Image (cartoon, rainbow, N blue to C red; front, side, top):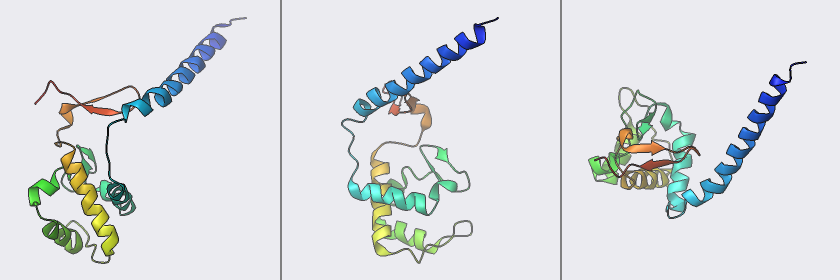
Amino acid sequence: MNRMPSIVFAILCMAFLIYSGSIYIYGASASEGTEFKAEAGNGKLVWQKYNCQGCHQMYGLGGYLGPDLTNVSSKWQNDTILEAVIRSGNERMPSYHGMDRKNMKALLVFLREMDASGTADPRNFRREMNGMIYRNENRN
């Protein structure tokens, strides 16, 4: 009998286990030094609850109907204007006038934190084997 399929299967299983283990080992140390406010974490949940990523991007990743919002806080430089745009919507974006004040505040903090994290050019970032994304220091 040909044992080759069994050997290949065993090698693939071992590779999967080693790779999975490395994500847990190196993934924890990769996130050291990153600060993300608790309020920004709540804002990310609001971002996901209202499916903002369905139309908008962060760092060029997400939907393509709306603009990339990675640096939207720098563009408007005023939470009042940004809140008004979110609440009123436009011809392509639905209005979120029913969003409560707590969720709106959390969303605005999330957008400010994302803005402070860098610029929206994905070519300046590298993806690691463990799924983490880092800024390339050698590119502008």
